[in-house]
Figure 1 (cartoon, helix red, strand yellow):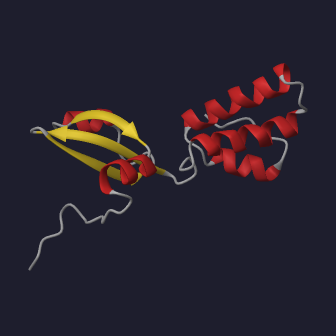
Figure 2 (spheres, one colour; figure 1 turned 120 degrees about the horizontal axis):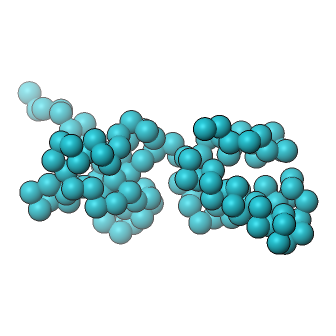
Length: 124
């Protein structure tokens, strides 16, 4: 479902690229700032977007990261947003531990550096 158009075109463009969960968080935060905080709608939306990006810096990356386990081996699947779902991963035998943020995975599991390789690539 498309997000209602924001007052500021730049804010609107960025909000449209968020996940559904990100848009919901943005709307909730903007509403709180406007109605409880007394800010005008345009400023409330801009501040809500900044707040969301402060808490979730990768929100605009358009990627999903899943922590998955099969045969007691945990791996991380990085894909274009919406390309894979937890349900689909479960249907092919993976336990989906959780969706995680890319920066958290890089820092917490790879000391800030990881090399991606195609899972079906074979050496000749």
